[in-house]
Image (cartoon, rainbow, N blue to C red; front, side, top):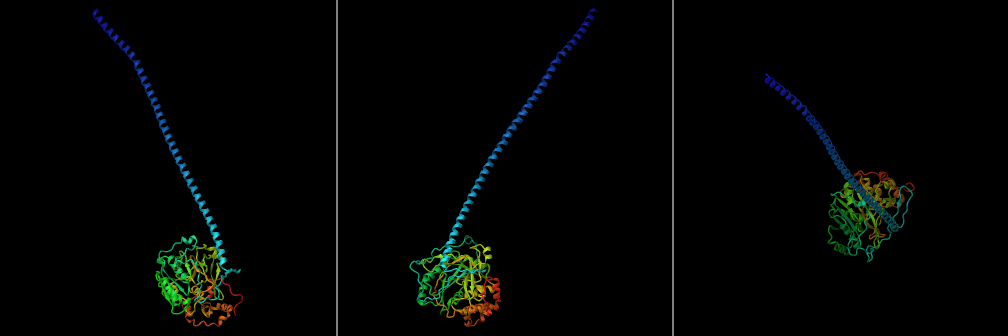
Amino acid sequence: TTLSSSSAASDVYKRQTQSTGRLKHCSSSTGPRKEKKIMALINQYFCLVVAIILTNSLVFLLYSRQATSVKEIENNLNTRLNTLQKAQEEITQNEQQKKESADTQLIQQQRSNNIDLEELVKKSNDLHSQIKTVETSTKFINYPRPKLGLQPNNHWKRPGDNFPYQNFTTRTIPDPRVDLCKLQAFDYDLPSACVVLPFLNEWIPILKTSVMSILERTPSHLLDKIVLVDDANNASYMSDVRQTFETFPKLSIVSNAKREGLIRARVAGANTCDSPVIVFLDCHIEVNVGWLEPLLQLIKEDPTTIGIPEIDIIAEDPPYEYTAAPDSNRGGFLWILEYTWIGLPQDEQLDRREGYDPRKTPTMAGGLFAISRTWWEFIGKYDMGMDIYGAENLEISFRCWQCGGSMYILPCSRVGHIFRGWHTYDFPSNPDKNKVRLAEVWMDDYKEYFYQVNPNARNVDPEDMTDRKELRKRLNCRSFQWYRDNVFPEMQLPPSEPK
């Protein structure tokens, strides 16, 4: 019993001891677990803090780099902008310098032009004996008229040894055209021309120079041929002429069997032309550079227009100085039915570009002009009832305007002309015959003003004018009153009314 009770007690004791041990063991293991949890939390917090710090550092680093990159880009942009600004300033400065240089050149050119103009006016005043102005709406300019004395046909004036064409080559002459003329563009399909030059006792070097200037200063495709009209020159003279021109291209010679005069000689030469345009020139001229194209362009645009070149002045004596004509005159007429130069109306002077725009002219000098061959034939060529020379220029001027055409002087077309105080030929015995025919056919009641200032003309026999009067009727031409009202309103009547 004692053993059993002691073993039982021992078992109880053991169980108590084991239970107590487990309690002790449990109480002793609770402390490390808490410490581990705390350490784990601390580690987590530490890791979190480290992560936050690293994240902030990374963000700061990225932001710093981005800021640096933006700043570098901004600096690059500023640098490029400064470069562009400097380049723009340099370009502006260069443009300003070019503009200032151009302005300086323009001012110098204007000064030079003013000096040239002053010299031209001085030379023009020296060439012309007297210029008179009438204080009316029209200024009449009286150019020196040819001397009435005639040179014998076999004693025409011969220039001295210093004549510039001794070598039979064209000389260099000034080009008085303005820059606009030199830049003028023309149609590629301009009509071609036939040039007619009648001659009588003209000094052969001058005649040759006239022809050579045409050949050398005219585009080949625009020139079909040159027709020299021999108005019954003597045989020995013509032998020299034919020998001189035997090798010239595009040249033919037409000979009249008897002396016909300038009017009929021109018609004879024009009758041999097949070109769309006929150009009439005198035999003592020099055409300048670019002389033909403006005339052809004008006629192509309006075939009923007669084109007249600007007639420059070549002195009749050595050294045969070439002087540009002023761009301010046009053709008029006096009541004795002679041609005269008149000034432009003030409104036309304001509305045109000086030296470039064509000038409408009531009449033409007659020596130099271009006309459509169709229009030439349609309006009746020249009046074949007129003799030799005189008033034919006024007659074709009135006829052209009254029958639906027009006439213009072209400053871009320049032809030099030798103005002589004598002639190599004689005039008709009755010079008023041509004027009477002109007045009776084309001037209607205004012919009385002509008879008023030239009463002896009433006794002149104009011969038969039926064909010319029928021509005017057939073409349904306008009256002379229309001509005065629309073409030449500035025309002044004689002081007293005609009876």
